[in-house]
Length: 177
Image 1 (tube, rainbow, N blue to C red):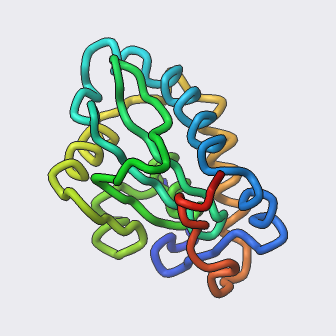
Image 2: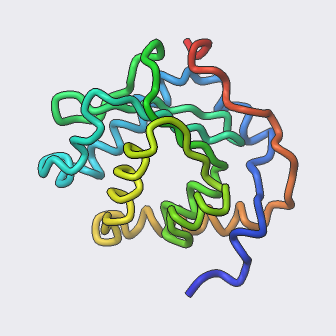
């Protein structure tokens, strides 16, 4: 059952004091940490070739209120942090709250994209592959305790009063080193 807070009418953003430290860390460092985690989480899917659609392609994920940018690609069967000079084929942009709604399955990707909570740019076919991959994932057994923590974080952020975007767009990837 969904939380009584209407996820799509609220758009809470991470407050500036919490977002500021994230912006000080280079994009490459964020991307390396994320791909390390994703490689562990998606080990069976990577072994089965379910992420091969990312081979040689670059996906940029921007968490606008946290000022985070991730550049991700697949090389030799593993997710890698893409080089900052690589042009991205796909970009996905949203707030930390919207990505948490997606991760905790409180909302599905179609609903978040349709309501313009997550914004897609670039290769829409690649975006559909990513969306379909995420829709098909069954992570409850592998990430049960982590999902509970993420669900708690989602509930906490849902209680933050609505604010205007505190820091604008994430820092440009070109200036992240």
